[in-house]
Length: 91
Image (cartoon, rainbow, N blue to C red; front, side):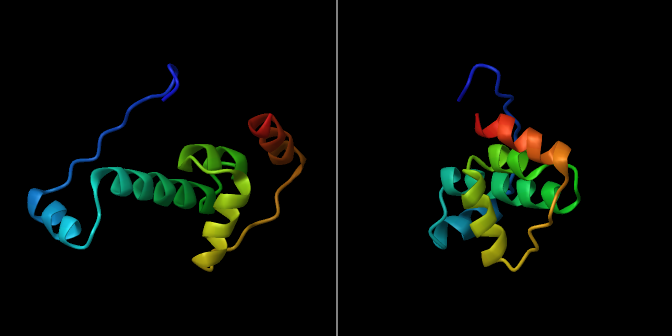
């Protein structure tokens, strides 16, 4: 975790967590899936560029694109400003 990262907490009822544990989920996997889900939602709502959503998800842009495709979510074309932001994120 970078020193400028912000830690966000998600509380999960114990009974729900136990059900998820029984399904093979651990805290790290659930945390990653929560980040990916939030990133996809915010990207889908046009609140984050593809690059920023990938950064939030902890994935390379192509990884997020693959995830969006696997869930049959559209990868929307974006404009010059978003493209510049994504290039900055990559750099």
